[in-house]
Length: 149
Image (cartoon, rainbow, N blue to C red; front, side, top):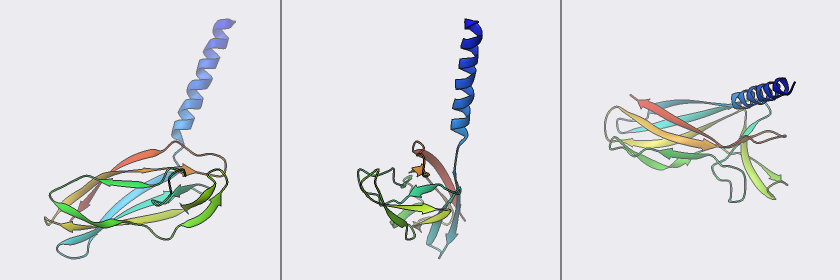
């Protein structure tokens, strides 16, 4: 009897852990468009499931996990300015005792690059936090590789 209880308990935690890891309410897509022979804009789009939101790049310390872009250094391109974002929704959240800025449904971030070479690949990673009205998932990190042709 003890053996059956132990097996069932282990099975329960294994299945629950697998389902928890499957929850991924944000998907990312990327595209780059040349704006001239020597410049391009990289677009990083987050599609967010209904009821969820991700946070702006401009969340103050002490708040939720903000969205952070880290571009890999390259001789092929140079970043021009900071990664831009549209105007976020801003709301006071009691949990953090501060106004926080976030996006729902979808958001497109933009990064301008100066091209030192005709074709290249812009690489990097992004980190973001995602929450709904009941829970926040652990911060997620995604790598990207965006061809510029």
